[in-house]
Image (cartoon, rainbow, N blue to C red):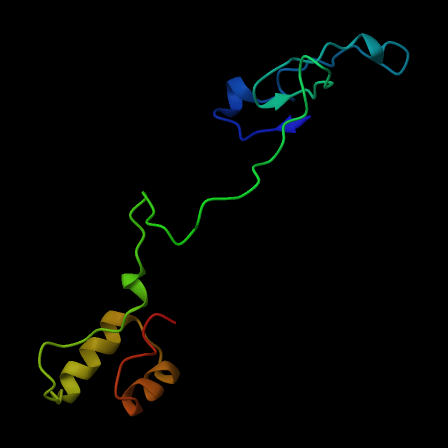
Length: 120
């Protein structure tokens, strides 16, 4: 069987569609199982239906993707100017609260020049 993800449990469940009431070990061979898209039965290959061959080479994964992914997430934030801006204790507490950081996570952030701990 080739199992696929169900679209709807009430109408697409292979096991719910199979009625096994009233069957026992003697007559279990007469149970009819549905041929449904969520569970496709295997087929025998022949000259008419050959075994599919995989492609020799795959396309380059470094090419631009169509789903909009980019490598911009891996780049550190670069401020417009290189001046250091000191923040007050109140601003630091607000930042910690907004980022939902614990006290143990805050200490490495304060000692580093960048907030590299954010996003852990």
